[in-house]
Structure formats: C-alpha cells, structure tokens
Length: 327
Length: 284
Image 1 (cartoon, rainbow over the protein chains, first blue to last red):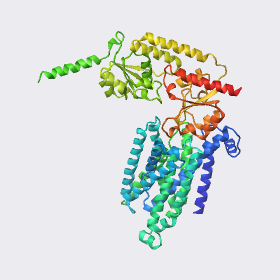
Image 2 (cartoon, rainbow over the protein chains, first blue to last red):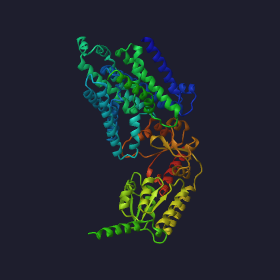
Image 3 (cartoon, chains in turn yellow, brown):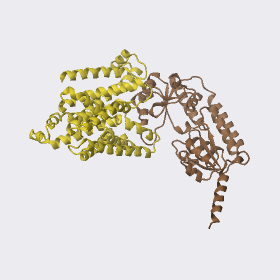
Image 4 (tube, chains in turn yellow, blue):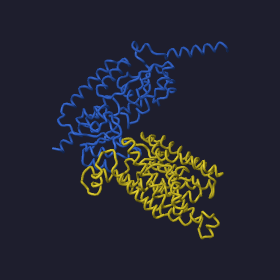
C-alpha cells in the first residue's frame, strides 16, 4: 500500500516537471525551471508562472478530483461502471457553468462560475442516484447516466447556440471535451477551495465504503450512517466535479479507468482506493495533457479526445465483463 | 376547373423563366438585388441605387460586426437560407466565397442568378471588389469614384511612416492573422510589422499564449470585447496578455472596420497608425 503510494507520488512528481518544461515555445528545460523559481523580470518567468505552472497544477487538481470521485462512486454504488463523466455529472456541471457565463453572472462575482457548476453537478448527481437507486443495477445506472448526459449536453448546446456572442457556438466542443489550454492562476484560485473541500469530504468516506462492501445492513450495524454517507458523497462529488468542469470543461473516463487499474493493488478495498485513485487520476490527466502538447503542439487538441481513446475500450471491456457476470 | 391547372403551371413556368439567369446582367441593371454576406452587403450598399438593393444579411445590421449597421436597417434582413431568399424573388443574389455552397447551388438550380465575390485579402482586392460591384450593379462610375477616394485617403495615411514597430494581432481563442490576410495588410499599411510572420504564420492561425509572450511585441491589437461574455474571449484578459499590455502599446479595435474588404478599412488603418504614433512618442 505505502509502496504503491510512494511509486505513484514519484511518477506524479516526474510528470509534473515534464509538464513544466514542455510547451509550444522552445525554452531550454533548465532555463524554464530556473526562471520559474527566480524571477527574471521578463517574458520567461511570465510564461512559466502564468501559463505552464497553472496548467500543470490544474491537471493535478482536476485529475485527482476525477480519479477520487470515480473511486468513491464505484465504491458506493458497488458498480465499476460509475464515472462522473459517463453518468452525466460532468455534463450537468458544464451546463451550470455555461449558464453562468452566458447570463453574465460569472463575470460579476469571483466564485459565481464554480458555484453554478457545482449547482449543476449537484442536480446531476442527485438525479442519477435517484434514478439508479442506492443499489441500482449497472443497466439502470448507465441508462440514467446516458439520459442525463444527453439532456445536459443538449441544453448546453442550446444555450450556446442561442447566445448572441459570436464565439459561443464554437465553445460547445470545449464544454464537451475539456481542455487546459491558456488557463491562468485565477482559474487555480477559483477551483482550489472547492476541490480541497470536496476531496476532504470524499476522503472521509473511506471507512463507510469499506464497511459497505459487506452489505448495507452490516454497514449500519457497524455504526455507518448510510444517509450521511450518501449526502457526503453527493456534496463531495458536486464540489470537485463542479470546480473541475468550470475551469477545464467535461473530461471523461478518468474516474472510470484509474480505479479499475489500481483496484488490484489495494486489495480491492474501496477506502484505500480513494487516495490511490486521486494520485492515479492526477498522473493520468497530467500524462494526457502532456500528450496533447507533444502530439499537436500548436493546436488545441481536447483532453477528452485522449481520455476517451484510452477509456472507451476499457468501458467496452467492463460492459462485456458485467454482461458475463449477468448484470 | 381543369383549365386552371395548366394556367397555374404556365404561371409557374413563367415565374421560373423570369428568375432564370439574367442574361440581361450586362444590359439592364438588376433591380431586386439580395446580398447574403456581411462584406458584399456593405459593398452593395455603397454602390447600389436607391431601391435597387432589396435585402442584406442579418449580420449587416449588427453594429458590433458591421460598419454600416444603421444604413442596413433600411433593408430587409436575410439569414442566408435558400428558401427565404428565393421567396424574395431576387433578380440577382450576391454571395461571398464563404457563403454556404449548398445555398448558392440551390439558388442557381432554382434559376436565380448568383454572383460570388471572393474574400478580400489585400488592399488592392478592395479596389477589385468595388470595381466588380460597380459592374454587377451597373454603376461603374460610382464605383470608380469610391475607388479614387479610397486611393487618395490611403496615400495620405501612408505618407508619414518612418519606423516599423512589431505588433501582434490577437483575437478570441488565441487566433492571430498573418501578412497574407486583410487584417495583416491593414497592420502593414499602418506602419507595423506583424509578429505572426516572424512566428511562421503568414496566413495566421492559433498562436499559443507563451509564443506571444516570448515574441515581445511592441503593441498588442485585439478586437474589442463583445457585449456578452464568452469563454473564447477570456484569453484577451489573461494575466499574460494584461502584463504585456502594461509594457506595450495597446489597441482595442472594433471588428467592424477590420472584417471586410471595404473602404472602411481606412478607419482601421487610421486607428492603428495613431497607435503607432503614440508608441513613437513614448519610445523616443
């Protein structure tokens, strides 16, 4: 367990440094790291501190959020197909964010954008849990997720198409696929508080999720308050997915892939899987964000394209496996 | 009863024939002209006789993007769909080369004569388009006069360029325009060098923020923000762009004078040249 965490942390640190030295402008790696620490009063420090550093920090924060949410939802629903992107939570968060930008609310108050995304995510996750039930079958969960994703996506597109702003319609892709291009420290500051609170809420679920593997009655007899567990999950998920989506759009599949890969390493215990998936999610999103910069340095290739290319085959594999197990 | 059928049919045929390619183009000028592109709208409004132009595109009425929004209010607006344009019974449709090919092809199939104007990517293209508009609408004299005025004003603007500072054109989503575009030509005419060319983007394209920061332009010229907020325009207030602005000359110029190859680009050139003079005043 601890060895796994150390290994993940080392990989994450290496990827973080790699992310900092890669970019469309060719800066020597050592120069870039030096100017990040020592202010040269010039363009290099500006690039490092205001473009590359926030991008790398956001990749870590958002990747960790999505990985941990996936692990928490899968633990709670005891269903390996749960992922905030697949079940429509990210889509609902994007709708909340788009509404606040298009109504101009986002420009008035600093935290209006993540708050409205949080509110959207809250509605999404609440609806999914309501439709799928506490122990919903994979089928109802996925169907509920498809319906909510479709509805949120349609309303997002409708809002952007109705907007008088000439750029609005082209933003549909961003909200559906996600990107970290040209984010700034401002975005880090508006997302960070929500992510810290949400991660703390989700991390507090560890004991409850472990107990839940024995069944609901057993968990309750162990002193787990299931109602509170459910509420903590809903608010924790809404906080991290809302903040993540508000600054980076809806990035799918991270919450699906990471817990699946790491589960065997933690003895399939959902409580221990939470932090491992946070690290794993951060690694996966950083790696994806490095890949989009290496593959097409000057184009804004969306992150969701890469995560879907990795995640969708796994999703198919999981569906196949679930079917073999008889749903 | 039966007799009415052929008469209806013959009316229809007569209607189609009336719309069919106006061979008359050269002889008698068209009298029901519909323009469906923001740029041809403005050229047509400048050159057409009163009553000759029937409809312009809806975009032409939007003051954010159109230099002749007020004048455009006096025409019927169209959204560029074949059906609505056909029902206006035009004897000539003017489209831009960026107009949907499906729409122009459909109109031609329905027998409506369509003239497609190429996009202007240089100042001399503006003369050519004005000349073409004069021919199409049968007002060569009026077009020639507008061209002569344009040339005279352009010569006056270009007379006094001494130094050439570097400027960046920066738009929503981090897009920039290079020398081979109209905006790039406006920049050159106003006495700036374009960093997009230095960055290897002669036609423009996405210029990553960090490339912009490292090119260290002397001035940043951005389109002025739309009335409504959008994510795409966030980049124009990114801390990096803000910092560059504090160190350099800044122009927030309206899209309407830059977007189309019309004599209104003279306003864009004058605004940009004023920015250059201001820079020279500070620099020396």
